[in-house]
Image (tube, rainbow over all chains, first blue to last red; front, side, top):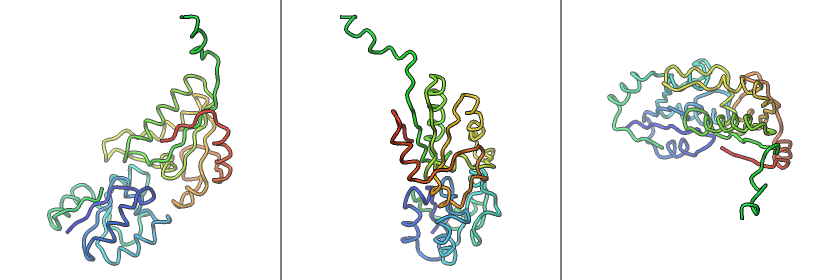
Length: 100
Length: 132
C-alpha cells in the first residue's frame, strides 16, 4: 500500500493520522504543503526522522522547489522524486490511500 | 430621503488601521495570493496597512521559491514590491519562524520580527483585521 499526504504538518494533523494508521513498511509520499514536513530543523523533523525508519518516505521535488526548500535541506531518510518517480511508486506500490 | 443618508458612505480621506494576518502557506491553497491582492487594494485606497505573517504564513516570504515545476505563478517577488505601494509595515512572529527552523535571513523582504506578545498588542490597536 502507498499513502500520500498533502497538508502542512503545522496546520493539520493529517501526517500524524497517516503515521498512526499506515501499516509499517508502507510507502509514504509527501507532496504539496506536506513537503514542509520533509524540511530539516523544524518541530516536525523528529517525527519524520523517527518514521523514516519504519516507512519508505518520499517527497515530491517540484513541490519542494516551489516552496524554496533545497534538496540538501531535506531530512535524511526521505527520498526526493519527480512526477515520473511519483507514477513509478504508484505502479509499484499501489493501491494508493490519499490522506487529505 | 436622500438627505438621510448623505455623508454615510462618504469615505473620502478616511484612513483606518488595517492589518492583514497571513497564516497559510503559499500554493497549497489560494488564501496567500488572495490576501496579497487584498493588501494591494488597501494600499490603493491609501490606508494605514500592516501585514503580519504567522504560522505557515511565514512560508510565503521564504527565499528561493521556484514554481516552474508546478505550473503556478511564483508571487513571492511581489512582497518586495509592497514598499513601492507604501506598504512598509511587515511583521513576522518570532515563534512561527523558530518552529519552522527559519530566521530573518531566510526571507525575501526586510521585516520586523515580533514576539507573540508584541504582535498581540499591535493587533489590538487595529481598526480592521483581515485574516487569511
